[in-house]
Image (cartoon, rainbow, N blue to C red; front, side):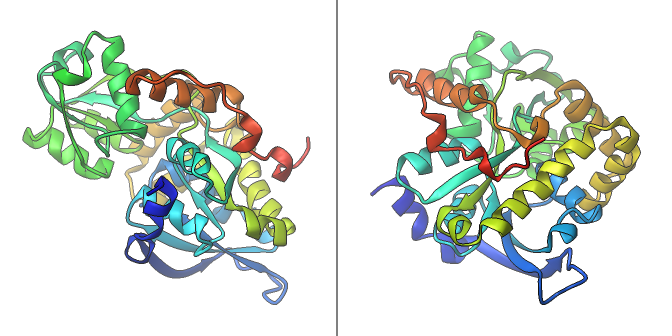
Length: 324
């Protein structure tokens, strides 16, 4: 069974529908409803929250219906099967799915660098301290698990020296770090800042290009509704440009705090890392070739296969972006 076929059987139980419809334009009859699949609120959805708050969807006559997926494979299959038109996905899973002929395409980079940070439980001072310990990156293989194992390998810790545990979301990973269930974890903002408030230490950041979070579209829908596909993509593109404007810093922090229900100081720490330090959000929402190729290279190294040069056009269609 292919990865794509395997995802298909799980879609009916993997997606929960939220009835909220967002960014209704002044002309409801004219607006195009787009079902957008996503995971729980986090900084992965910051551009979406900005586009909603700032009216970037509305001015393009797009209204968004949010649908919450239980996990990333279910989200990916929802877009592939056209249960939804678009989704905020994970780069590694998208590459694997497209390689299995899933009918999806990337239209922009929400995060062209990862904002997952390697955090140690109290008493863990360096990545090398995690040898012989339990760690988590969400899943136990592929994707973010491979990213964690790659970071550990670069710090002298082999994959067989750690025990990987599956803990899907960062909120639960903080609890696991605090109660001794795990000694190291990849955490996404704003939960990395929450961990530091609890005397946990950021051990390392991965700073190379790495398409953690793309916007993906169902290809058939995008072909049938090109204006809606472009409207969705360009609304997030405008949000990506907006967030890098220093004049919008305070508003961006407030939007993240409200959307994730985080304290303002935690959201401010997330802005400092994601926007100012890591500069992780896709510049002009474009997908750098290296951000996809690095995922493939990391997977090949950890899985013991030969590296393959990706044909980026197979995965990414830049035609949805607005020209400068």
